[in-house]
Amino acid sequence: MTRAAWVVGDRIAIVIPRIILLHPTKTDNLGRGNGYIVTYGGLRVYIAGDTEGIPEMRALKNIDVAFVPMNLPYTMPPEEAAEAVKAFHPKVVYPYHFGESDLTVFSKALAGTGIDVRIRKWY
Image: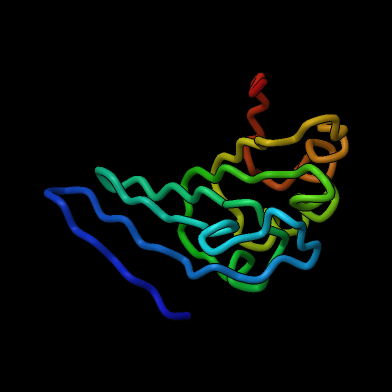
């Protein structure tokens, strides 16, 4: 995977290239769907853009905190999001951009994996 990285003091940001969505919309444009890994003080945070459980996401390593979207038709359903999160196994995951998605499906799918699922009000 090609990556670009910037270092500013003790902050490092690594950009994961944009991947074409499987459910493209009329609003699909360059830059939409990018994911980012930000390292700060030894903590690796993954912020997924509007995407699906793509191979590049599933192949991530050493992620401490992940922010993962789920809300069809723009991202992935809770089941797919949970399977993707299981693959790269962050310590903590925050689902976001979930709209009317049933977050209990996501939480139950990750129960017993050791991944700390933290659900917050995003809207």
